[in-house]
Image 1 (tube, protein in one colour):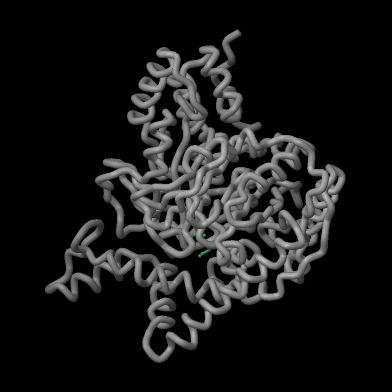
Image 2: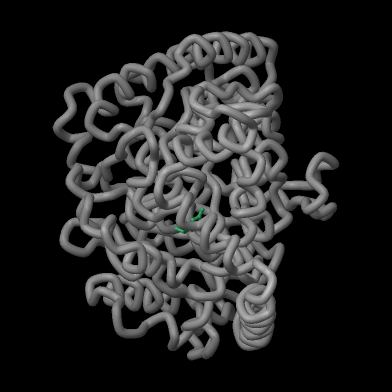
Length: 496
Ligand code: GLN
C-alpha cells in the first residue's frame, strides 16, 4: 500500500529507507512531502535560513535514478539539512553572521560531500548562533528560531535550527557542530538525539572554524539508530583535515542491540549540584534507574575539576576564536564596509559592522587572554586545567564504561530571558563543556519531560568508543517512549 505522503516526515531514516527500497515512495515524493511540511510549520519555527528547493528536487531525482538502478545505502534519497556553517559549494553559507552574508563557498565540506556521495538530499541551511557562539540561537544575525515544544522558548544553541528542524519533522536528520555543547544542549532542549563525536573522529574540512581544538560535527536525529547510521557515514579519516584520525570506523548501527548486563554506569557527584532544575535531576535519576533495570550497575564517581571547566573553556575557546576570526577582514570574501577611506579603516569598519555583539565580546576576551603579559596567567593556566580535566576522565573510566549525567541544567528557557546576562547564558553549557575539553564523545538522548518540556540524558564515553555510547543510548531509548512524543505544534498543523 502506498503510504500517505503527508505523514512521511514522521518516518525515521530507517523507516524511510524501507519505504524507498521497497519503491513504495520515491525520493522526489519524500522530498516534496518535507518541502510542504516546511512550508506549513517553518513560519512558526524558523529553523531554516534558506530552503534549497531546486537543489533538493534535483538531488532527489538523481537519488531516484540510483534507486532504480538497484543501488541502496543508509541515506540514499533521504532529505536532510545542514547547520549554516557547513560549506556547500555555490550555496550561501552565512555562519549566522552578517559578515558572511552572500558568501558562496567554492567547495563542499567533507561531511556534506560524504552525505552527497551516499545520496542524501539537501533541503536547506539552518539557523544558528553567529559563529556558533551561544546557547539559545538568539545570537543569529538573521532572527530567532523557536522551540517546537513551546514557541515562546529557545531551541538551545548554537545548533538551534538543526535541533528544532528535527523535532518539528522538517528534515529526516540534520548536522550541527559542537564546540562546548552546541549539538547536545539544543538536542536536549528540543527532545531529540544529538551526538558529539570524539575530537578527530569526523572531518572538519569545510566547517567554518570557531575553536579549532574543540569543534566537531555531529548528527541530530529522532532515534539513536538513525544517529548511528549517519555517524558511520560522516566519520573517518580525511586527508583534507590533519586533525582527523586514521582509525577504522565501526558500523555503528550493527553494534546496537543486546542488554546492558555487566555495564558500569558512572554517576558523577559534580553533575548533580545546586542549579540543576529539580525536574531535570528527577528525570535523569529515573533514567539511571532505568539503565540499572536493564542490567547495568550504577557506580558513584567524582570529577572534581568539573567546576573549573566553564572558566577554562571561556579562555581557550575565545582565544582560538580571536585567531580564527582574524580572516574576516573585508578583503578576501564576505561583507566589506563601503565606508573605509583606507585599508585599516576598511578592516575596522568591516569588522565593526559585520560582527554582532557576542562575537565581538569573544574576540576581545580571546585577544586579551593571549596578549603578552596575560598569556601565562590565562591561556597557559587554562591549558593546564584542561589537562587535569582530561586526566580525571581517564581515571574515572577505569571505574566505569559510560558516564550518565544531565545534558543541560535546565529545560528550554523563555526567549529573551538570558540575553541580557552573558554569564547565565554561558552556564547553559556547564555540563557539556567538560567532555568537550577532554575531547571525548557524548550523546544526548531524550529522557522525560519537566513542565511539558523535554529533558535530556547525557552519556559520555572514552575517546573513540562511540559504539558503546550508542549501544547504551539505544538500549535506553528502546525501553522508553520519550522519543515517540510529538511537539504540540505538529498536532495543530493540518496534514502533519
Ligand atoms: N554555548 C557555547 C558557546 O557559546 C558552546 C557553543 C558551541 O558548542 N559551538 O560557546
